[in-house]
Image 1 (cartoon, rainbow, N blue to C red):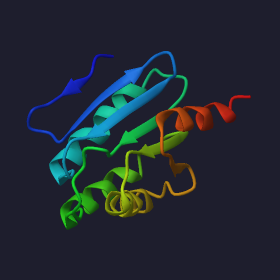
Image 2: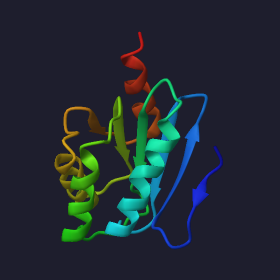
Image 3: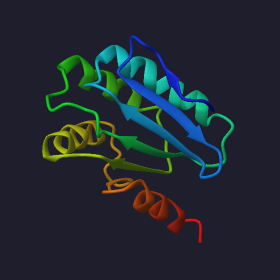
Image 4: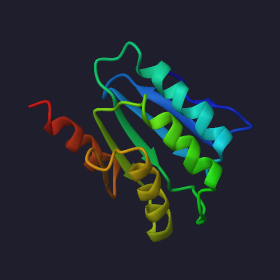
Length: 130
């Protein structure tokens, strides 16, 4: 899948067939509108895939807080959103805290971890396949 970038949205995403990983890179703080578009797009990408791994790259995300509306949007989509494992890379202290809030709201704390590099995340994904 080629990288998709909607100029109105604060993220890009692409699926890596070789590693069976959906990469999502945030370019700014996600808004409720972003979340309402991103979550269904992710489900569509995963519809015919044998695995559901996600790497979220927050390296371009500025510090700040998720709005109440964005938190509510994550909560709304959480009930239908399923992944095998998720990894967050490119965080600093502030963005890590924001990501932890979103992960917690979605009930994914047990299957999403933080890593310094994508390579570490990919290794962790593969651990379950052995």
